[in-house]
Amino acid sequence: HFQFSFGPLGCIKRMARMRFSPATKNITKLMDIKSLKLLDHFASFNPSPLSIGQFLEFGRNATESDSFHFLIKEAPVRMSNIMKEINLLPSNLLQIPSIVELQGWYAQSFKELCAYEGCEGTSSILQEFQKSLDVIQKRHSNVVQTMAQGVLELKESHSVDLQTEMSIQYFLDRFYMSRISLKMLMTQHMLLFERDGDEAQMGPNYTRVGCIETECKVRSVVMDAYNHASFLCEEYYHVAPDVNITLATNKEGNPPLEMVYPPQHLHHILFELFKNAMRAVVEKNKTGDIPDIEILIALGQHDITIKISDQGGGIPRSVTDHLFHYLFSTAPRPSMTPTKTPLAGYGYGLPLSRLYARYFHGDLILNSYDGYGTDAVVYLKTHTYEANELLPVFNKTSTKQYKASVPTADWTDPTSSINRHFHPHMFSTKSYTNKSTPPNPTDGDS
Image 1 (tube, helix red, strand yellow):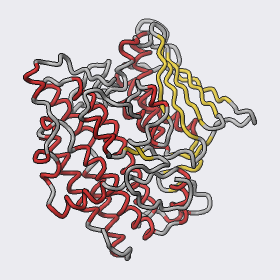
Image 2 (image 1 turned 90 degrees about the vertical axis):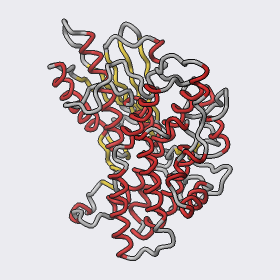
Image 3 (image 1 turned 180 degrees about the vertical axis):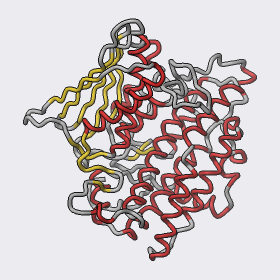
Image 4 (image 1 turned 135 degrees about the horizontal axis):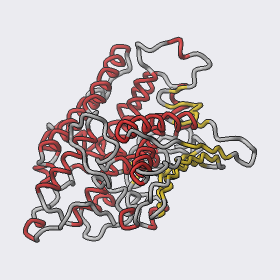
């Protein structure tokens, strides 16, 4: 089950105050009556998950007006679903200033998106919509840090019972996955239809469709992430391990050179894994030769697998269980305003990296060998119509996670055997349950 490194559970009197938020203390307090009605309306729909194949098809064939009309329906649905879950967080957390500010961002952004409801896709409206998306993106640029600060403040100011710890862990997985998906939708639209872009790039040899690279060179992204992490490692330790890359061919003899994927997502995942591996290797081998980090890239029928193997001493099993918990880190926590980019310490790197991997139905797992080293394995779907978004859905089943004394199984609980098969009532991938769903923008696989 979920656990945080929150320390003692505290006395019963303090724990009793950690009740879940009534309506008068949550995000609804920041919204007018019209916005509240729209929130209830859009939250009654399931999100419509798209595959990478659909993103490509839509990006190549849809007009800006088509994208606009889909986005003004889908973005409020995704945002309202997670806003409803924000309502269920402990009232003590919702009253922390940083979380109040974050709730205000969501309330304002939701209102701005809903303002386009019923609008025609005229040139002036489309231009204004681009500006609105840019404003929303900038407003939400510090969401991860702000939420982390709020949870830290809760940890430091209140004793937190086990159920609250598990509920917050559950929420953060869903909240950040929702954020990834919203950013993907908005960025895709903005890049496809930016008015000051270089039109010369859009020729027959242009391989980008929005933020998706149709010829994403896996080895190049691996090396970019390695070089980025190596630079930081040398800044801190004045040395960094080298890397060896092995490309394993498939049964047809084709090396895994390219795939269709957002390279920025892959870079995010690999950069975090390289940082962890380098720190472990350098700190374990302070007086001797530093062993190389070994990379294996393998192409299978359904997945591309990237394995990063280090000889950094490994991780005890008692610690491994906590590595995907937010705010858990084996490194000292840096200050909120560091003078340099820290190599480790915030405790968000691994959980967020796993969400990026799972977003298009991949995964990230760790196999550690205490006393020797660690293998970090990233799985990514090779077929674009199998790489569906994994989206949280707000419904009665998910609500139980915030209220039940014993948590039910869910895709955000890595310890549950049920999670090897995603729970259909708590997310959207291909089927829709409990609520009606707006149509997808394409007729392809959803």
